[in-house]
Length: 265
Image (cartoon, rainbow, N blue to C red; front, top):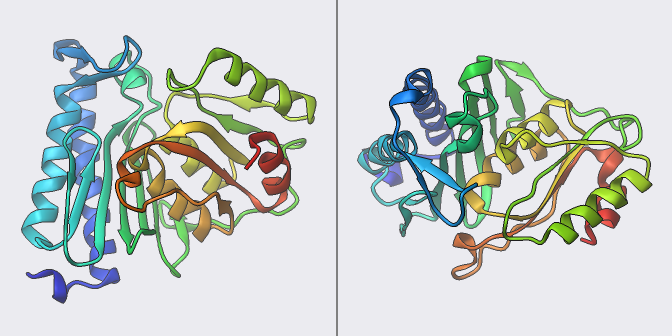
């Protein structure tokens, strides 16, 4: 079926089906992770396995077969340009380090952009049996239950997620933690930015901040947060910016101002 016959609803259904299937495949690798060959990318903390590559190939093949005019950006194999105005943005396994070390904090993240804006976001966390799903104007759900953020929750009465990696200095990370603590907040970091963005949409976290993150890590989460009633800082997508990193900030209504000050955004 050609892309022109596919609208938002059909792509949403497809994204959900593909993400669920990919989650099952990834879980199979996770349960047999002792046999995986682990490689490093930028540094010893940035790892990849055949599971990442096989899951991305599975998702890409189904998208290309059904929507050949759509673009596709995956963490492992880069950008395939499209002509339909839609671009799929996928992290086959976000949280590869927890994944290969036997911790359950990883997920499959599938987003669809339309003219640069996230209009579909699906995040599947197989170890937790959780499916987060959202589409523009259709709200956000967790296992079918509608998500709606509480505006009374702030950085002082809830928990903020943070992320860090070797793209930013230890001093920068230390300073952002200090500013959050000085403002009366507290934080967690679980190793998967996409999953923590889903937790913002679910109201488990009041916000998430990472000073440098890629589109495949955040676009699905952005859609979820927006559709649950939250806010996110715009991610640059012009030209080749979509394949480069940028600051990521998403928040529930009661935490937006505080977290923007902390992140200087």
